[in-house]
Length: 532
Ligand code: N01
Image 1 (cartoon, rainbow, N blue to C red):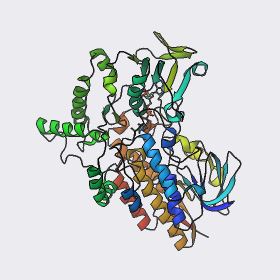
Image 2 (spheres, protein in one colour; image 1 turned 120 degrees about the horizontal axis):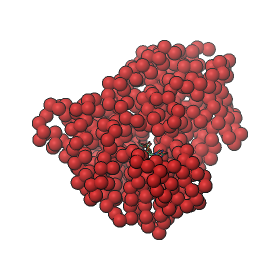
Image 3 (spheres, helix red, strand yellow; image 1 turned 90 degrees about the horizontal axis):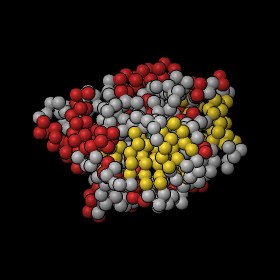
Image 4 (spheres, rainbow, N blue to C red; image 1 turned 60 degrees about the vertical axis):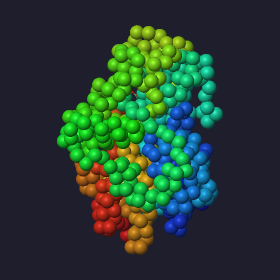
């Protein structure tokens, strides 16, 4: 491995792999470090049964290479984790990416040399590399949240976090399984575990909205039609709110007749997937509009749950539909009709402690053989903050972000020149299709590097006032929606002590793309372009 490179990239998921490919194609030397033993990032780690993407496979795939998108055949509308991992591995081989990736290697430190404006990057394995640019491609949902439940360490059986699933899989046949958590991961895995386990107890703290995924196999005709239309599909995606070619109903949910509204929701319900939360443009803007979707959802879900008391517990009461990431499922609510599945309401009786053989809640004891933690992530900032990044004046990134993440356009951080954070706070991030988002960010960074070189400049650094304005703009845009009204991980609400700041840019993927393009076209307005 060279001691000096142009760019160090941290992470070999979708963003890191494309950063390597793109920047290497521009003639730069690139070194990628990846903690896992293979490519794929979140898709490398999250191997729990039922793991599947909630963005259509045809959209959740790279657009940068026409031959790649024409050659690859997705087998289902929503790809499973194994299929996505096969795809990412195919991309790594096809573009010969592995030779610049060091696997099984966690970056620990990044320190700025204020004289040269180069970064010294260190890894847990003792590597030390000097880089002009650093790209953080660590992913917004990669730092698993292990709940601080008393006695968890003393549990005798298997403990499996959905985000760190054993590669060899887990056989729950004949076992008494407990699942803690009913977010997207829990909701996907619970039906699959229920099919295998002898008994399944689901420990639910907060009920969640989920819609049927509507997954179907793709036939040749559909694939051909999609491929024939790929250019247009990508164009629409790049201009869209969330990075896939979706158009909401043109009118407010409140400006249409009951019949028309119902038909629109019915259509989205039949199509399946997360876009149910975007059927009407104002669904996430006013409670009245949101209520129309919520009531429709509730009617649909209550109808498939046999026991009305269980249904009552499964219907969320505390947040508007879509204000937390809406989940998608394959017969999740129907799973509670099975004799071997039991819902435990932690709101009525919280978990008090875990013992060797089971879980104690305030009013009962449950004998459990295996525990599944579907307890999510320290999202958006968690993986960045695990690195010790020291910028100007010896300030660490964690100090700079003590009150919440502060970026300009999500990409630049004042005091940390030439350090680019991809798909994180201050960008649409988790609200958009992460593959196209990664491409958008990497292309922007590649252009920025090209601009610096063309102008004989050494570094790009966000100005403090641009950061302050962007943080304000992001928070004002969020406040104009219902999004901050839920206790979601978008706000850091799931991690005790984390500052409560709405982290993603809610203004839409297409709008964001235009903003960052305009900044670049204006000579990187809001950034200092530092000359030698
Ligand atoms: O995590 P989550 P996730 N005691 O944070 C509960 C993406 N994703 O891994 O709400 C008891 O949503 C917690 O309860 P509460 C997607 O963006 C996508 O499921 O805090 N319970 C909650 O129920 C998603 O939003 C896909 O009260 C505890 C659950 O654990 C994001 O990843 C698939 C607890 C955590 O839910 C995160 O989803 C999977 C405790 N101490 C993930 N601590 C697809 O593409 C936490 N909980 C389909």
